[in-house]
Image (cartoon, rainbow, N blue to C red; front, side):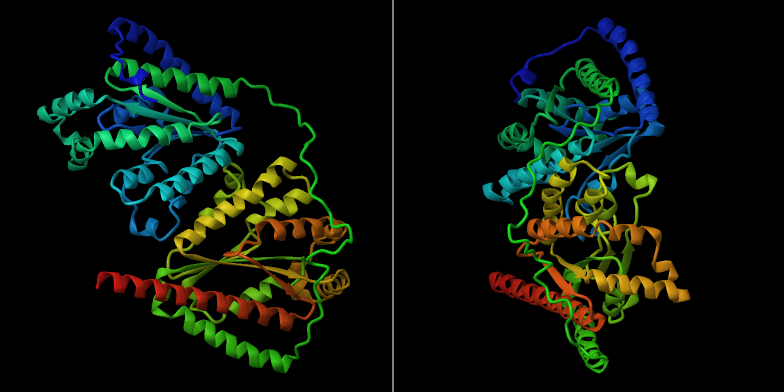
Length: 507
């Protein structure tokens, strides 16, 4: 990856001045066209060898273009708040919206490379990180992000010369940190790790552009011209006409039996029995939530189900057992303008809880494979790829130590009709029933098919779906409480065992 970048590239000052004057005007025009176009965001990743001119180049881009529409984010060691979320959380929060430009220093590639160079992770873990990055970047590109990745490079001798020049000048000495000197000593190791990393993460939709960094004028024009060409190519594209999807259909069971049809929806439980069980399981949940080990965990609970299946009532029976200061309820409706300007998972990443806290989603990211699929709000290709993207998202939560519990509350079509009519008659429940709820009933079979596909493709060993028979609200609420409580207790036990193993290793 670095053969051409190791050459002694040089650009004459007169040529640079002539080219730079035209380039900065063209970049500014492209930026304003991007803002007016508003169809996609531009995300620029800045990476590479220390001392190769990364900061100087970004400063010039901010000088040449309108800085009001550029957001530059530098990612150093994660803060306490960031450590309590999955590693990608801080990058999701900083993604630029459509029509804007984002510049990332030290993005998701940085920590895996540093950890591998220092021997903190093995080859297997490094390969897993690469695979996760490949899928994440593909998802961003599939969502319309123009992802541009620049790797600034210096040869060993060029870096030595650069560091000496900066350190020897009192005006620039501040630019050379102890970390820079530490990484300079590990140059060969960094190149050995970075070369295959770049090759494996340089893809058709998001290739790495290696920028020779020794000559300031050459590197500036290299980045500027490539950025301009990439933006103009996307901006000047004519919107493609919607072509019917050619994805092979998901097979329907020949005997028409599915995971919802196999449920016995009318489960017995009396009100007296419900009150007794409610006290028992809310008590256990409260004790578990106050366990000292819970400080190492967080909980994300997903509630999906038929309209009027009792999602809100089930959530309230769980949260009633918790300290109100330790949980957040997120009610998901149609996306706002702000949310539509981002990849669809963005609005869920932003609500992830810190350690020792709970987040309850009343409807969730599964809308992509349910309502958006059935109502045609996204293409078939989009909801088909969403199964993998959702599994990757939940996998990131699980690896971080987040407990993920997912409930689908299901009722029969006749029971739903009865509840709809009852809501219309009770004044303080009228807000719960809308014309859209009645319209959705006409799509009952399509939603049932979508739900069964969702369960089959996203119910994993560590984040399984719990199907809740909800014709009897008492039964549904107790089943949710039991499942939730047992999942938290099992997670606390795992934390305890992990702590015990660490204690034995120290001895």
